[in-house]
Length: 124
Image (cartoon, rainbow, N blue to C red; front, top):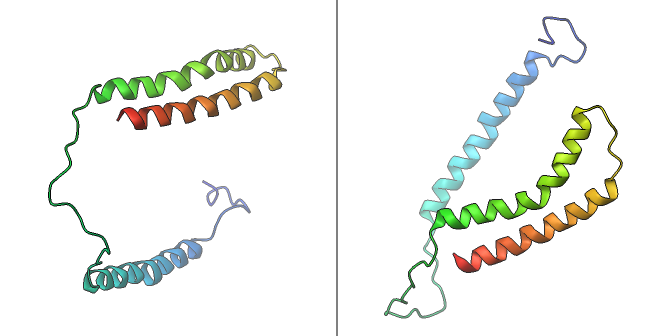
């Protein structure tokens, strides 16, 4: 679109070819050499002994869909009212002045996300 309108912001086509050349001549060979060296490397010997008896893993108490639903509902619930006020003020052409309250809601969201991630990691 920028080329067709003769804009000064248009990027020359040679830059695309240079980036494509750099990707094929640097990134691809380094990836292949790294993969080859990784397959030829010796296996890691860990300096610990492992138990031959496998540890018993308890059955899940809650289904995964319930945990996902709870993980999304709690942070969304903390932000929903504030987002409603912000978007309604934008749509109605008014100014939004409650930036201090928005900061408090942001801090609350950070705390809720941290607590939800800890609890769901424990429950999972």
